[in-house]
Image 1 (cartoon, rainbow, N blue to C red):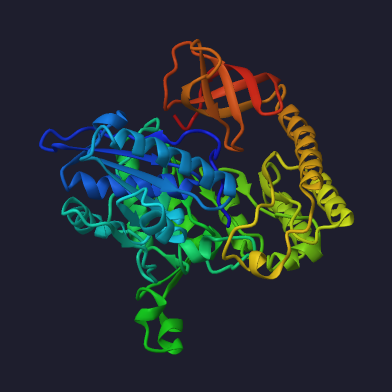
Image 2: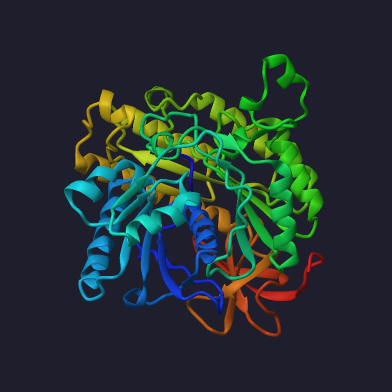
Length: 482
């Protein structure tokens, strides 16, 4: 699994779009987990808007309640289960309300939800959203329904996602679905299916449309964006033989970055998430070539131990990861790098843990996403490896990883002191309505006094102070990108 988890502890946001006057039914949709789930909810809302649904933030007035779920960790699943209990409590006073589960949990726990626990009316997997109109008809006729069939072709490239909530400034654009990597700790290949890429022209068209609507930054999204590959004649399945496929013009991820950055030179381009084994040098050169591709890479490593990486089926060694980091620093000297790290993977020894800490010392990540290992049913790790690291040891190792990352985050933010950086204003600061909050191209949050600027402006900000996670400064004028 190569996705940034947004926040598995907070309640999922009830996503809202502009109501259409002719729509009479109300949809309440919450999303949990990774960026891909939030992107998928926008696709679902787009499909259901054509079926007469407007979104609502009021749970008790909804005709249809959908929760888009995450299975990457046990804590995420427990959060969703608590929400389902809440939905059903409301349903007792509004019996016409229907409840459905979407996404990764839907595929994994379909029989439990429908047959054993009877807590939902509908279970819909990540590749079946176009079937929602038919499924809703079945539910309204009094039948429980399920469609969790995984597809080798579905990319939703022909669905124009509505933009739910958000700030009208930044947006996700999905470029791949599924994953072929088969990391032993990960459920994604089983819940989202095999990897497939989307037609580059549909991606560019979506980015152009977002630019016309005033968006200033997009994130190209996939479980593993570096594996993006589109053949001129279509998908691999469309070719009769390897020779015909070789003759077709192929677009890889570096080529896609070039296409998107060239199409909208004033729009910031980000991407997530990368896999170390698949990131090639041509991607780094594309980043260096285009000023509007942000100098930031989320580069999950999961462990600093080559032995544990092998147990995880990560397809790269500690030494190969170091070589990639060196190449990033050489080609993009001011590139920020973040990590995913798992503490206490099965068989992890104290030496393996020390290898993780020394790897972190070598890289000095700007920030990271760090978790204790939790066994996920159905994964290779759950089937083949005993979860043998004691809970107390896992917690202690995670604490050491987090503390070290805090030191490195402080080190990285201090590098900005006295410098002037470009910030894209996204919203008001959480701590003061007199300050704006935005991000640098390195993905670091910066806050500064509002003055006459507005959301969506590119502003040059001189950095005077910092915390481990936030830059504090003052605006010195609009940037040339504004």
